[in-house]
Length: 338
Image (cartoon, rainbow, N blue to C red; front, side):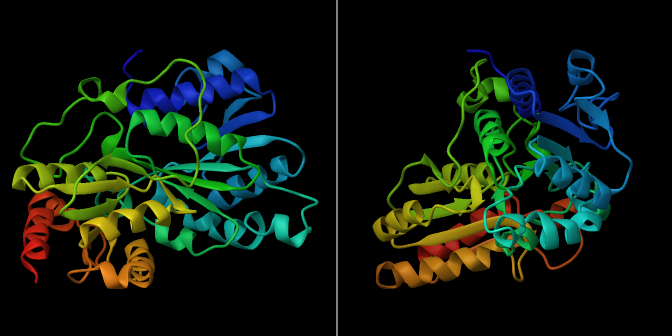
């Protein structure tokens, strides 16, 4: 089984779907000739031609509108918004049209659109190229929201997204494109070739949407995250020697509350992590649901480690990022709470 980076796994998923399904189209900002700003679509235009893989103008509203037009006419477009920070010019089309077409037409039309977009910090992108805006979209009925944390899941979930008949916002944590990140900027980055999750089958497969992954079993505390924060949670728990059960949600809508409830009912303690700002972040929804379902099992208040309620700073990126040191401090406090 070959080892792949997340970039290579996503490229492979697109390649296989373009090859097997003539209704699949890939387009977006720099997707064609340059192969994407991070190289996710590299080589696909040469292989499939300019009518299957092509560049779009820097107009996110038009990109989403074109994708929806294709979808209601029987195609399965995969549109790329170059950075999640710039998805908002297309927000009205996503909210008012794309998410509602199935309901508005009483099921006569569906919109099998996948919108790929790199998100998150850790690459010195500053406030204009580091945003994690997933919570804006989890609040919109009719959308599926996905954020993988490793190459294996990225390929399987992207394939499942393209095959879905409902619109999917597919967030790609760009700090994980080339390897897992422990949340400590002082430690050299690891490579996906050193991780079992970097082993990706060459053939097509799917990872089920709406199913979380228990990436580490434990009995002392449950840590729930997605994207980059899964690896930060792993690093913090291992550094402290705490028997933490760590859950990678993978899908934010629909999210796998059953797996979370089962774990929290066992451990009695819970920490929720995300890179996005704290106020009204997706963690707030998750904590509310855990509180409803696990109230009598909880031995301490649910802890939350997130980004700050500020834009991502250019000069102090690691002061913003909820890294390993912050997670360790919060985890210690949670375990000491009686």
